[in-house]
Amino acid sequence: MTRVIGVISGKGGVGKTTVVANLGAIFAQKYKKDVVIVDCNVSTSHLGLYLGMYYTPITLNQVLTGDAEIEEAMYEYHVSGLRVIPSSLSYSDLKGVDIARLKSTIKKLFGKVDIVLLDGAPGLGREALATVRASDEVLLINTPFVPSTMDIMKCHQVATEIGAKPLGVILNMVGKEKYEMTPKEVEELIELPVISNIPMDKNVLRSLALKMPVVLFSPGSRSSKEFSKLAAHLLEEKYEPDGWVYNLMKLFRPKSKK
Image (cartoon, rainbow, N blue to C red; front, side, top):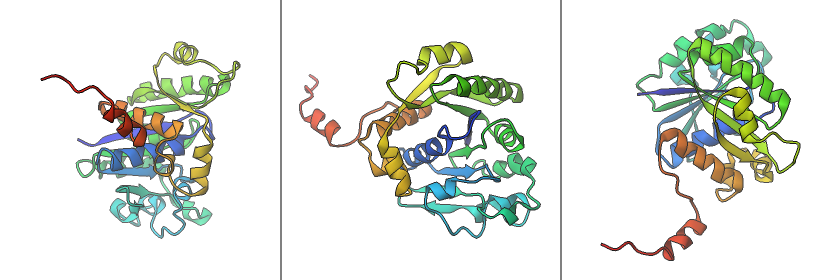
């Protein structure tokens, strides 16, 4: 059964694209899922740029105008097995795009892939609402501050009314400052569980400069470990740390008695 998960937020700049790229890479590489990530922010697309994809002659834009099939807009990314459907970087490619066709377009992937991650536009405009309508489940991306939290409350209400199941809140760019909201405070306001706390991590910025998800660039970083925990949670898998630290720990782990 194909899962379609929309990644949404009330504000831009909170890390939706980062979450989509990293979760997609983990699902594909670690859990061997057939994953497609889709840039649904057709007016200000970033997902392709995030992954260093500058030449994509067929994009979601052409699919939404009826000039191409969705399979034609898919591109393999790196060696992770991840597939990407970018939106066009060209202003001229916005002409004739009908974002209302997004849901019927994504339905064509049902039964062909395991997971579709939709990178939605911020806010509650037409593009953002089309993403929610095309999703069976949604992840709400937030930062630990009041303005973005208030906007996430609205996103939660809209998603519930439309019928997309909220999976929980991801707190991104979390620091250790006293003025930041705590997960408990966010949960009380939004009435949803905080399922992940992604720390502020310079490795994310470094990975962005190299056009690759941080989980591939620096698997042992704090942010990568949290993304891995989140992926395991969403797939209902047991989380086990990766890397040499985990392997070293296994050497000293007491053997179970038979």
